[in-house]
Image (cartoon, rainbow, N blue to C red; front, side, top):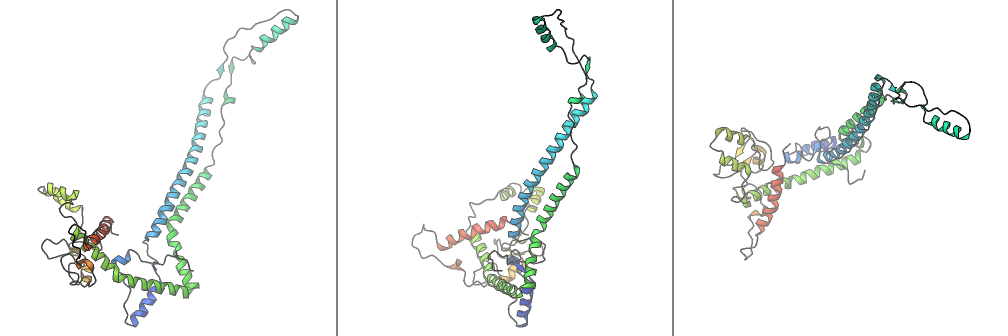
Length: 341
């Protein structure tokens, strides 16, 4: 009820009820979520998993992999031992008996103490049986056939455990529905908190992403940074087939939200030499202005610090904008490496 680890990232019925109530009063609505928000907040019945749920599944998956391998090794060793002993017994019964090699029999005649001793010694070296062929089947192993139903039970338990592992995140979401049924007041408090949190973050998340992209493009090293793909394009630009192949390897994405774009949804900046590529939603959020070649005040970001100049007199000192650009550039490279959902 009051745990700080409670995953309050799901859009429950209380969230929709609060949003409908705000609509009747003419307040700002939460739904539908923005693209950057849909990565973090999902509906309670959504098949998509959050980052925390993915981490839990990965940890449980490694545990189940090692457990399954251990059980498989035990069953495989048990059956292999039975197969080896059964093979030995089968081929052992196919062979004839062991022939007793010839021996020299020593007979002691006469009586007396010495004769009795010599007779006992000679009897000690005489074979116990007088048969010419010995039956070796009694020495062969008799393996017990393994219980295959136990193997089936172990396999069924492993499959059931894997099923629980895959459905655990979805079943744990039932806690939200149970809380809404038995503790509606607490559920309303959590929903109201999440509603206000998303609205508060909405103001800053898009601005921060736009500032990060602007800093990354404005202050990156255009001359010293050459990617391997661009180098290949430069070498193979004379070949039409190679150029088409290399061009198809990287699809156009929005520089702000990293959404994959097609020819119908791609919006390019009209400025000559500008690398701005946007999706319709991000471009409209920026007042239909490119954030790379326009000033922040032009696209509605009145608090952007990228226009602030450094007052230092030292020409070799890093300016304020360069320091912030490095921070944003690192985050931008990380975002571009992530595959969009």
